[in-house]
Image (cartoon, rainbow, N blue to C red):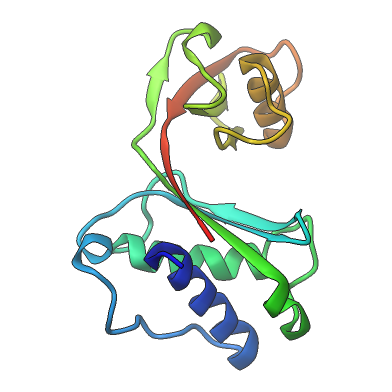
Amino acid sequence: MNEYVKLAKYSLEYFVRNGKFAELPGDVSAEILGRKAGVFVCIKMQGNLRGCIGTIAPTTENIAREIMQNAVSAACQDPRFPPVTIFELPELVYTVDVLSPPEKISDISQLDTKRYGVIVTSSNGKKRGLLLPNLDGIDTPQDQVDIASNKAGIREGENVELERFEVVRYEQ
């Protein structure tokens, strides 16, 4: 298991078992401690999504803390699912996506569903939705934009601004 996934698993399991956040382990590499980035942690159980929460831009001092915070949030604060229980822990599979900084794009033709994730922002800037790249069943840039818009509550036909980003995906 790679270090990114190991850290997500450790953090989530510690929280579920102890009801509090884990301390940063002493064996975390300088690579993770020395960088800041937005991070998404997704959890699956029996092939189905069980939680996914992340940050577009860094909110903590390093990637390690970002992973730990978002792993707990994915397990306990994703509004689509009840909190993960101790009985589910052995069945969970983790994915950690480290995001590149987003870049504005002028139109949908600059998206590639396998390479880029998308951020859709309403023209007034009050609604924002994100969809990670390379997801099963998302085959066209229009699918990507539609799903991200729907997640944000942006109505069909409403003017939006688009940004794209790349991820480095770490899987169990």
